[in-house]
Figure: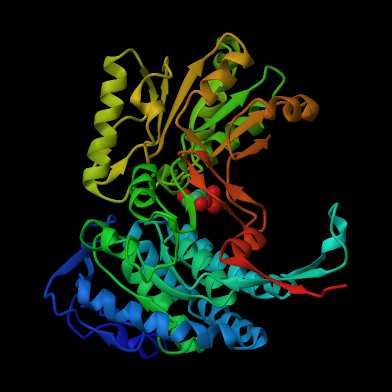
Length: 484
Ligand code: G3P
């Protein structure tokens, strides 16, 4: 029964008051400060979360440090079993977690179920893949001037305590994508869930605890990023930071976490470039999926579409027709305030000459799926990451101009190119200074064993199953000297 499994997380108040996990117990904070988590769906309070104090952070991190070496010394096959069991329980509680997630962050039930299922599958994949992560040995005489007098035995070892910071748009999946590899590589984990999505994050923590992660190895500290983020990130007991969120927050973290290994996925304003020979029906379908799923609140969401005016004149009616035929295109954005900000950016763009081809209106936290035309690259709707269901059409003279617009952005997560000639797509992809280029498909992180990275202000390091496992560890060479 889910209620029994998760009973220690909260008290029986209505709405529930959730506790945080200090690595040993589920407790209320002595701060007395709590944040009410409101559902973007209807404004109802899902529950209240604690704002922890610096001394509670110190206590949890001390536990993380004290438990880490013993955890790293635990046989890998034991760590693997625990993580597989956690994946099983994520699947077992799929419906319960999906309903909670949908209510907490405004995903549709199918989007929420997809995130929970994907988390279980990803967690299992990590636990399988880790068993093939190897160290290596190197002989000295490969290098000129050396004889066989040395051998390097190179192991992969844990960083120590990994701070995992997840975003509101995937509070379960992008928590599991950090927690699972960190644990499997022998680290302790201090998990900071997003404020909106925190309750779902607490449930995931409970699952790892019940799966057998020993006392002290995982903790879950709650509170707004403003209140506890800086203290956590700069804490001397935090060895490595794994973060998904905005580019501005990523840069702020990097400034106060000097010399710490970082694994960041940050913002994106992902472009679609449409060649004249593109399959317009496929392109329209991918643009709608890429721009409007989860109300455009994805780092990999399509934000602008470029092509010659003739191509856009051909493409737009196909997109509009498909939008008309599609129901439930987008749910609410995360808060009413965010929706108001998006509404303002749309209005500012129109004042600067953009035209609304469809949508453009707001009700509460809901923004109609919107397409703007006659947009220029300098408009905020393009140059900033507008985390909402808005796609801009930009007419260009040629594809080189489109590439220059992409490369002139501060972001560099993904881009997608539509052309029937994949050779052209491959050649053109080399021009784009982004993490990943999709040919004839919209930007996305999955499948999750593919490398996933951002360049410029879109990220640091590479994620994806094997890449994340390696990022959650470091090499430890030991050189044996054998005088010949
Ligand atoms: O916004 C988070 C980013 O990881 C997007 O993931 O799977 O929606 O492409 P996805």
